[in-house]
Length: 229
Image (cartoon, rainbow, N blue to C red):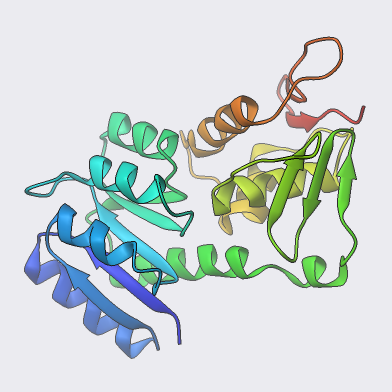
């Protein structure tokens, strides 16, 4: 049974989500402010945290920052519809994905399952016991570890998923929709900048090629490509 931490100050909404998630087989713990949510998340007992942006005492973005300073647990943000700034900042701080409010319990549950599937690994991962090596990049899918030139690269679960998809198609462009489906577990929505923000973060975390270029290149109208060098 996957343990879910739901951090939101809307008591009525939390109660509705908790009831639905428990009916779907999840074990749910709730917190109603950022400080309590961060402290609970950092106990290491939860498979995923659902985190609202607008909360008392410590807002969701600061809560996310505090959790990310010590943990790579998957985090799904709840953001107000149309508030692109909070979404982008959340992704830049290390959120794995977001859902816009109001949302249905069914939609939230589907997004949680998509993230957990990717975090647990795919059948392709399980078959690939040997490291995945592309130039200076080495990935161990089963252990969900990555290194550049021998140095460990700290990645969120979604960053790891996206980088693995690119590594398995190294030298070829991968469309944003393919990255969304295989890396996030869902089709890319219209005007969705999720992939772009995650790839920007990956560029900063990975090293450069011998000629100084980023190993991750944008291919016009086609998507992104991990340079096979």
